[in-house]
Amino acid sequence: MIDCALHRGDVTIDGIRATMRPGRRGVRVLRRALDLADGRSESWWETMLRLLHVLAGFAVDPQEVITNAAGVEVARVDLRIRGTNRVAEYDGSDHRVRAQHESDLAREKRLAREGLARYGYIATEIVHTPERIVRDAEEAHGMRHVPGRVDGWRAEARAASISSAGQAALRRRLARFVRMTSPRSAKPASGAT
Image (cartoon, rainbow, N blue to C red; front, top):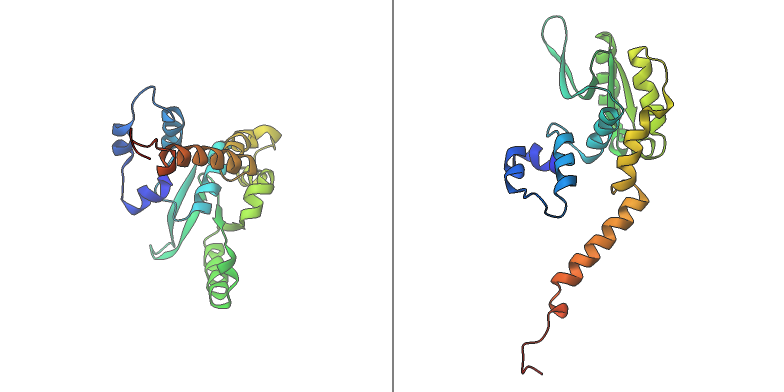
């Protein structure tokens, strides 16, 4: 949500920090979220793919503009894995609509002509097989595979609404909030029937 609000220009990180009060519920979690926020992501799943890379220790550049030798724009990519020729992108189901698919293939060829390898990922890969995505990033860097590299992402994902456990925890918190603010939970004024 922070990435979206930053992207739209609705808030700034400094503006959010100015509202934070030490000791208030959720401040620690919000501080951590702000440290990980980046308003360049253009969708929720792009944010998830970015966070997967960042929490696994990879520097990425969201929404990087790729130009050719003549300085002409070839494409703007979701994530460029810094220090590599690898581009990681989120591909939703709209990428299989015929016109979009044709456009994507032409774009992929333009990127390949500039020496960039485009790896498209879908939501189920981000949620269920993040190890494969991390391994792809390791390979792009020519690094040895470290199985625990994905642990930071796994820990955050378990607590977030991207996981079943995180969704259940969010529902419980929201239900408490609704009970606390519901007009039915207010006590009747004295003398009221």
